[in-house]
Image 1: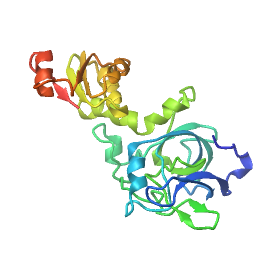
Image 2: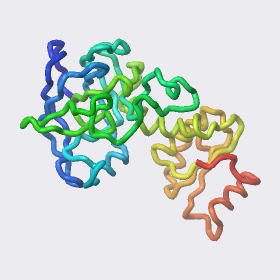
Image 3: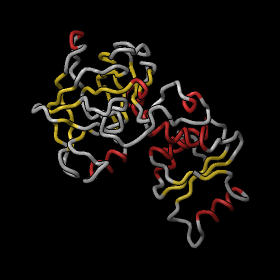
Image 4: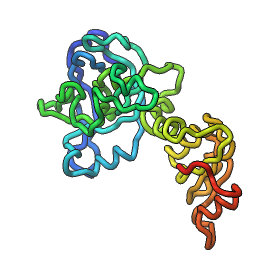
Length: 276
């Protein structure tokens, strides 16, 4: 956890530690970096907890653009607001927030629509910069630019995030769980709830019970699915999956001469209504 800076750091650069990609695929380098104050509509936050997403690993190994180096990875996190830039009234110092790689300006037609979560004012792209200004808030102690990742860069004790990429949350939520809401949980729950529109009483089959697959199961359960079939090669996942709503388990390596689809058809008397 980062050392808490005092109130007089607002408007000033902060010196802190970060895990920096210096060479693709090499171990991250823990080094001191300078985090600039937030520009208008930006917020500087102190990272409380961050988790690892497979996307971080993909870009850690990437040698060519959009795998920019040096870079601070990380995009699943929870933090506390240290200071805000001009024209920010959505959050204040001390608020607990989660950063998200997708923006929500709250103004464009897509952000106001219940049918989309893809902002048209600040469209997503794998950029090495801050979203509005296409500049970095990170430099190393030599003054050289360090690139951002997915508008978050949570593998740093402090980071700067655009207000369109921040959501205030209940501080009672445990940080080690709240950070998963940034990407993995919202991806899985959203797939069931918003994309697939799982209906109450339906049967759903989920292929893969990793973090996102379990989040899909939770989303299906919240939507009222009565039968949730988990498909995986690891039988231990079934016991874990039960906590998220999985009612049946198929080990895809133990189906004999049958295909997984045949096994599911036999289990359900015709097949699942949705496959995720």
